[in-house]
Length: 350
Image (cartoon, rainbow, N blue to C red; front, side, top):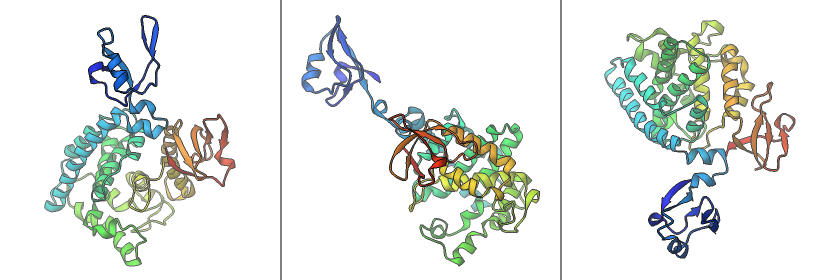
């Protein structure tokens, strides 16, 4: 809602509150203004009226976010910092000179000051739609932002938080030397293309090996695709042989990859991503993953989701043993426990 001066009224605007003058209602809330009504309101004792904005008519969580002034401020700052991030990384690839940590951390801070909570960050990133030519750079920035959020959720020290943020910026640097048409190919990769993709941890490590960069960051670059059960690459490392920061980054990388839209699919919802983690828990450090999953799940309470049968529901209560299958409520106050409805899946946030 906002107050609009009578002289600024336009046909099609909607009254956001009853217009009462001297105890008499002139027009009710919801009245659509036309030229005749605007002319009648043009009188000295009515300096302004309350007008409903698009945001006020938004009925779903996603609509409310997209009309949110905070989201608009985030988008503006994010796009500016994305261009800075791109410039810094391209300069690094061109000169092979170390990027000062403070430069990357300042980019992180400049974006994150527009965010109030980690939950808000997840919502905002879900609603971002970077162009195809920005996907590589957006993944880099998104990973750093998510790293900072996870660090806050896990009460990491400020020093460790900075290291994890730097890991987020750097860990996929090897992909920047890969052909774009392979990196973001919309269809299935050939065996040769996949082999080429799998070289990026070693390629990335070779770029920073002799630079004065934190050793945890270097390890995250070469180890972020290793998995605790030995199913990862390039060296099939297991358990605690994998640097703890690389174990964090494995979680971040998986989340960011699924949360990013592609030309051939929409971004996965946070609850869909949790479902993927639940199916492959043995690959990740569960002591690190479970508290992160809990925070992600908590952030989804009150959001609106669409199911595979096109029905719309609000996330009401989490199922503690299956975060991805919460208890839902619709506008008729009906309750649906997804844990008992294996035939239904969440397909998107609305």
